[in-house]
Image 1: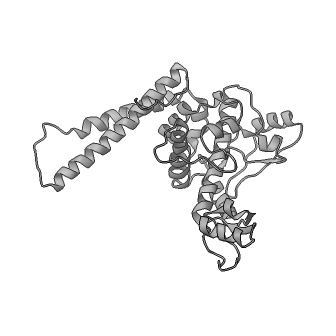
Image 2: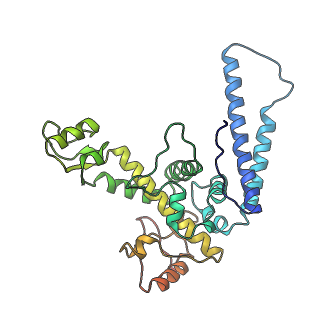
Image 3: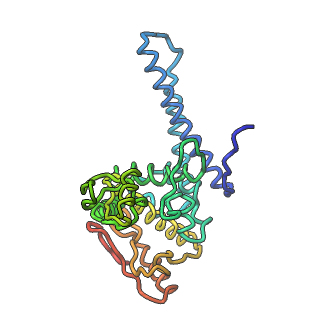
Length: 312
């Protein structure tokens, strides 16, 4: 039997056209990459031939044409024109992918959006793609975590990079006390029997500790684990902002994030922009008032160092 097709969500005709353009653009980029690699491989073989014309030029021209049409279509989406366009690292292609794959209007709260993007923990762990496994949510996770989060915000040094640096540093200094089997891959924070502090905990070492009576150990994340956790937290906050800003601009109902409404937190990170300078998005204060009215209490706003606050 053939491979089972991946289910695609139902979207409006306008979003379907934007998705068509986005997927066409990505296909053209892939064709260009394959063409360049193929010509280089033939050159290494010492083969030379006369081409009737430059095949690369029409591919690049078509790619630019499709990108211009994507940018034109994005003007119909206030969340891009009034907010995302002013953030470094999230250009029209990334924005179009996010809008067409996970439009904010389809989710009743940010937690549902997190789960759909595979960045919400299940049984205490973020879902990981296994070899040979296919799924729409893992494609979306690659968009929000790798393209937007890592290659966008972190490498382009966006204002959201400030959150990433803050969270990563906090995770690197955090000590966990837990069952060693639950913390494999982390680093021992103190000596345990024959294992010294700084040892990476794996299945064999965790079993040895349990067999010798160490049912709870102190560990801290490996540097790469702290980076991944900081990235996930930054992406989740950005997705919350995407949900709040998008629905606010479209006149859709908004709700306070679960962690604030029921989790006991009284503070919130506001949506931010890089243009004209790293600052809180001016329209945020209207959203804040609506959330406070819904909650019946005030919210304290946490702003990273280096971000200006201009209440309007």
